[in-house]
Length: 235
Image (cartoon, rainbow, N blue to C red; front, side, top):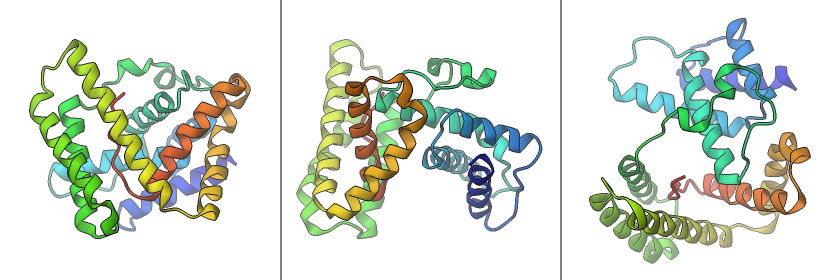
């Protein structure tokens, strides 16, 4: 399992590096092995790698291939976000200092940056033509709310900030529900099976209610990724 996980990461990193092969061996293998041991799903690891590449591209033309070790902080941040979204308080194994670090010790994007990113991805999704006309009314409303929120989010505190976060979560749920209605049952069944596999490392430390909640949250996230929807919730 560990070797297969490392091969998948190696293949993905090769694709991101435009075919330049970066072998996951030696210290890199140790890093990726810890990800597998700590239960980081491949898609979550890919998301962290993508995040590093997005930041790297913003710095201008690439000067060298990206090694997997460079992506570790972003992978761990993505894992923290995934666990919080699913209500998983901690990784099942704390295998190194980086993994033991509390989520709050690694800072993610600010709320204004999050809104900017969500609005940009929503606009890109609409421009791609991947969604049918049935989405238009919902996307128009969500985009307008995000734009207004972006203008007022900086420095927001207390009840006003809590109200905005609650509204973002509600809109996120609307997008996922709309996406879910467009998927057939075989597709949903496949997504349920995939997310159940992702939760296996955590199942032993969860009661039934917590597991059901995490499973539903994981399914919602899988649906979002399937339809390429941006994440609106901010945690």
